Image (cartoon, rainbow over all chains, first blue to last red; front, side, top):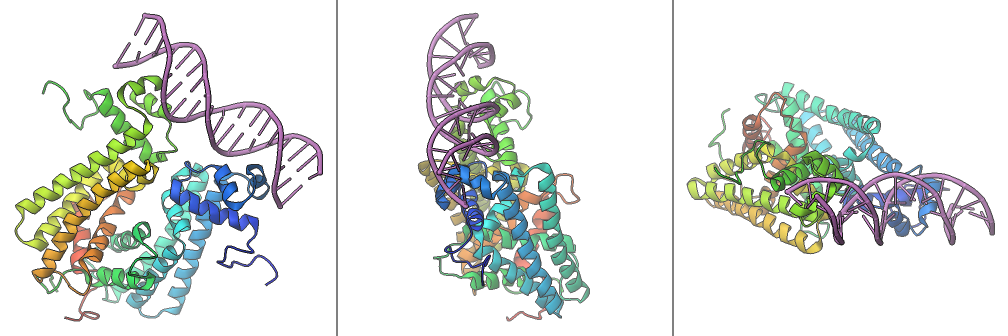
Length: 207
Length: 207
DNA sequence: GTCTATACACAGATAGAC
DNA sequence: GTCTATCTGTGTATAGAC
């Protein structure tokens, strides 16, 4: 505990970390292009010029934000897959874990999801590649659950995976920390809709 | 057919309409703040200064884009509700219609969904109010389907509605017109997931 | 309705003292 | 590691001729 802790607290963070956290907040609120380095510096309590001692430039902040976020997600996915045995159950764990992470760090996740376009083509490709790796983990899990007879096979695993991410990703934009439902409740709710559907009865179901 | 047609074709459109369409493309690709009036003028084939003969300013474009899009959605919702009888069936029509509209006009929809934050507080509130009206129409439909015993009641209509929009909205960001699935196929697929769920069998279902 | 020319503000980034 | 001062490019928007 000497240095470089990843404490969520805003105190005793290095200036570099506070810049990243501040950038996430501003990028989410105003977009990458709409945020100025002066605003960010002011938020962290330094002058605009001092920022360049810590970061190569504005784009570096976005790049690191995206990569760090995707790495965290990858860690969650990998460990859940390693620990799980039942495919469908593991998929549920993965989905809930992803949502929890996304809602806990909405600034970084929202930025990663919407501001990739602002990166240079090279970095954009790099970030998208890493994101696709994460998606592939989930898609493989969906396919495994299909093979195990737990998930419907009339829809390709690719599209079931996209549907699942649809369901989870958009929550970041309406979730309200002061709302009636917390991360877990929303995670359970969305997972229920994904796995069991909204309809009641077997009116439209063919089994 | 004298003038002012809303033809989808890019020809014989008024400069004002072409500016709106161009703005939607650029705002989606680069974000509102990341787009310059010079780029937009160049895209339409006029000088930057000429733009101000047609529009009050850059923000006006975003504002009109958002309002127009939400009005189109409202029209779709209202007519589907008026024409439908069975609540669940109507909800399906509404969901598919919304997705079709969104995928047909991805530039405008994506801009409306992600760039509201760039509007002035007043206009932002106005746009959000109009958007919430649209959501309310769907939520009322969900509630009606619940009362009719067609939709599960253990999840509040509010959250089922949010889940449905999650499922639909995020598609705009990954849909590929050259992909294997067209609007209708994706609409059917997502509606199936929403109503029936991804799981097979009644493993986790309590009825 | 479109143009050229331009005003004015502010962006990202650097130089070099402390 | 932070500062002040500043460079340079570019943004939105206007003025006024055609």
